[in-house]
Image (cartoon, rainbow, N blue to C red):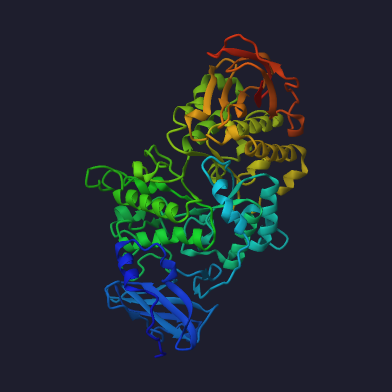
Length: 636
């Protein structure tokens, strides 16, 4: 048997923290690490496998022979196996061959902490280290203001595999290529942040990355780990923040993954009522187990620490919070108080957010949570879960349903478009038009709009204008910014050829201008999560399908007045209430000819009259363009 030297990176303090579920930098200890022991170069390995009676490292270096390199189990009942293997190094492929005390079951597993994996469909881990030299110091020093809750957030959601492909070569773009094309595009379009659908290693392309097997490695589909760092670096150098989709809710049953890792239910909950997702045919983490909590929180910290991520969008939080999520009676067990909340998950999410914000105070965590669970984005010290923001799923459903209606029927559904303001400030909401809304027969966003081609594009401009003037931060899935006709195809590429046609060029230019207007108009973001930042002018003009409101920033002179005409009828001499005297100056109009609109506008400043209207002391008469949002400044 080849020699495995006794060696450890763990201190007694590390072990105590790990057992207590309080070690949040486990990636510094577990996995494979290049090392020099007694003057000999090699690799140190450490893996958690408490039910194992033997753990071997198998790989290219020993012809994948079990027993050639057996790790040593620690004496402290931690369940950790470790050891130093001389004369192997960076680039070597390996797995753990585990023989269990449980009926001598044998498993062959990839390393849960590996920094790199083979390109799927291959599944081995690869010994890896890099000495990437970051060049984003300026961003990292000042990102606190860019990621703050009173900063503009216009997020471009991207699936790296299908944003753009080398169609002639039928291959993905690499991280390096994306660092040019994607970064330049996002900067030109005036987005503030990019959100990447999961880039952690995953085996099955149709999962879009949401079935992860390699939690500590960027997928090898697009290149090496340091090449992904280069992409992040380029985003930061261009003033663009990076949000990563993160999936602590479930993991796949693939043989090389975390499931039944050491012949026992190690990472997943042993009770199928808590440990198996029937919808996704996947396993659920055991949030009651200290070591699993440490694994997950360490993983979240890893992407902030090692890859300079500016935020995590936490996937499927609702599925985690509720014991009866997508389960019938008898398929779930109430908590100790008889309720349906998963108490272990609640404490886990609080601890996760406390650690992230303590160690990385200039980032954000964002919950994709689709229920009315209270205080998701409130601090833990007042009883909240501690997220920075939460996706506003109710707004998204109501708004898309409303805009899909022919304008002739909209007067009967005005409440659908105004209801979100009844609860808009109960959480720090992000308004998402995400990938989930352009798949599975739902149609593209443009494809949902009613009317002829002109009306469809006008409706889409109006929808986006309403979204950007509504309280909350913004997220749009790739392709929607230029009016993609087809549903998203994860195997293909966005239909960039559409930009040969003027309506799509105009739509792209509109979204670029909308981003610019949003990021340079403090009233639209400074008080995005406070009712102090919003005031209705009129929400009840059902007959004309017009809504009007005021958005407020820190300074009164920055307040803006917004009017949405939700029908294709031009409205002359439309009267609205105004809070102060002076003049109204039109500063944004979605109906401009440059955007593909009809060109109806308020070219001259409008004098505000001392006549009360809509409960306001003053009023003004406007021209409302068809299917359009218009924004006005109040000038003294």
